[in-house]
Image (cartoon, rainbow, N blue to C red; front, side):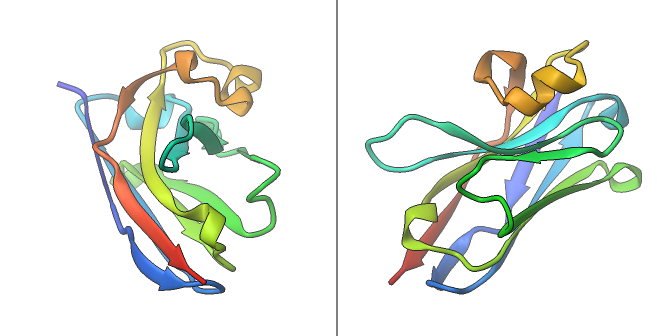
Length: 128
């Protein structure tokens, strides 16, 4: 059974840092595109960052240069290092697994239809 367990959220002041983690169970982790999404109150969920099975990352413009996505295939774990946090980064963050066969270009697009398993979400709150 496929399961994603994300953690690491919290409350920080603007300019602070957090590191999110997501452990995958029940599938060949190293073979899949993985991504981080977030949803702010009253807004649609958006793709923040994604990483191909080969480890090539891609970022939304709003977080590029501040966030770093990485993966440790030996630990079946996905990370999101978030620095220089801003109040607009507040929201629930979800890790997600790409569908089987999602290629690099589709992984970079971070379209939700390309992802079929989701973590339970971890809350990030950034105060000004």
